Length: 365
Image (cartoon, rainbow, N blue to C red; front, side):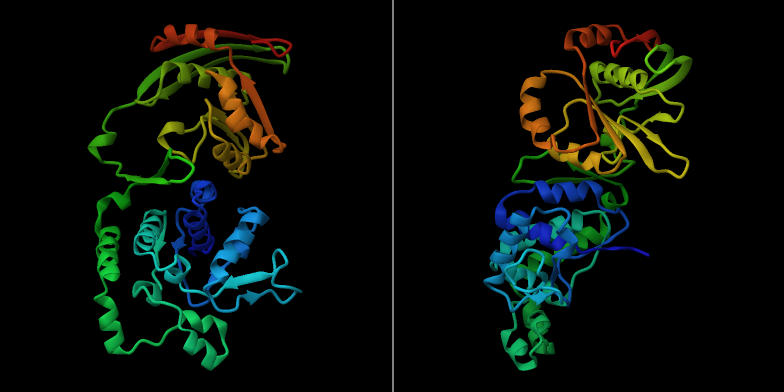
């Protein structure tokens, strides 16, 4: 059974109304790939689905913004006051009205929905860019009817000719027919007020560069953990990966070696780390990132695992201030900072057949 992406509508609205994309991007990194995506339904815009993703102040901002142009919200039965945090269950408003009837914002929001992994579902009022029907809402006494306008055949045909709907229809045809959407979704790097989404087809010429394989022999002596292993394995270097990053991955493998530790696809797939250890029932026990991920990525990774380690390298002072300091409250993070000069020397000598002897004692490598 495919889950419905009920978190997507409030997160997209929040991104457009606040100008911040960080919470939307956090969700895009972790959302199910087999979901049904929506921006609107007959029941309104659900708030509980984002209560673990948006801070209380941001939820209040979203509720206040949308409530000024919607019918009365649907309250939780336990709610005492509409102003209490967690009181509102659903916002009753068409999505077009929620975006202030801004045509460009509406098309951009639909593009985000269509590029999000899953199968898009477009509600009929959303398809026709409908506005709030306060007359129907008043007549029935049902707040959700504000988003349930009864279209006559003539009204529907007229609505289909709106310039906004004529912009939306080709976008829907693109999503239904382009072969790129049979490929792999990737969330590219972007600024705090934008989102960069891509679908890359596995047979696309842009993915034709092959990986470079390295045969590794690792003689590991970890006196701190009483690990003494002579390991032989093969590791692939992504076409866009630097020798420094490859060396950092190998150092991370030595530092955290476990019989179930494996290399993830990393740069080839944002849903996988550089290294990870999984249980027999496929739970992620240890997630290991390499480099300088931003605070959103760190938070996302830490939520997917019992233990999260970060092997950092490069100019770490600025990164620590911008990315690490905001996530100090996370309890399962372990950060290892590699000496940049030593790592650079390792990266200068990376033959395709590599033999390393690594000793770890008193936390020193």
